[in-house]
Image (cartoon, rainbow, N blue to C red):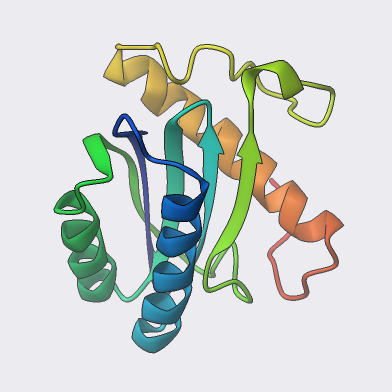
Length: 149
């Protein structure tokens, strides 16, 4: 079994492209070292990340992220055991969307992610976002992802 955790967080004011690249570089190396896989979406200053792997390693990584001063307001929205990984070949996939870039490529209504204060509404969006992330993974020719539900 593989533990999967997904969370939302807000990028602190002033977090720019260089910070995001630093996050991705460090995350990719750390995740590879810890046997984790996952994907990160940045949407108008809101991060949505899926981490998967051995539960203790995922929890350690989440705790490290919660101490990162570039994040605020971390909210866990998915914690589940799965038969297989959703992103087996990615130590850290990444997509960035800006509000003006909403298109048919984003099949979910993501316009309120950065302003939605309801944790329950964010939890409801999480499975849809994970499905979207998996479709990106599949379209990019990544092998080994389980079929979309």
